[in-house]
Image 1 (cartoon, one colour):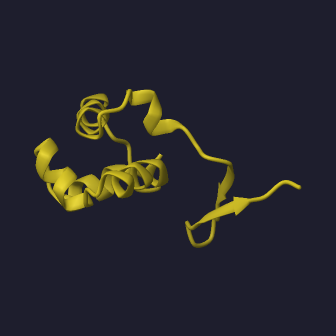
Image 2 (cartoon, rainbow, N blue to C red):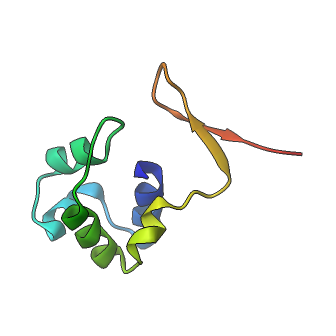
Length: 81
């Protein structure tokens, strides 16, 4: 979910700090909520979706196949040929 939100932010030219300000929280709190062990509330996700002008379900979509590395937390994209 975090990578999808970052993708949507980039498409719209919005920074994570701008998003945090628009939803009434700090950048630190937002990053923590969206991070690997985070647990954002329904209200937070709803506010994010409104700022990004998408349905909340759009925040959970994934483009292509990817996995999160259990060691470093980075996203690994998988290409199927």
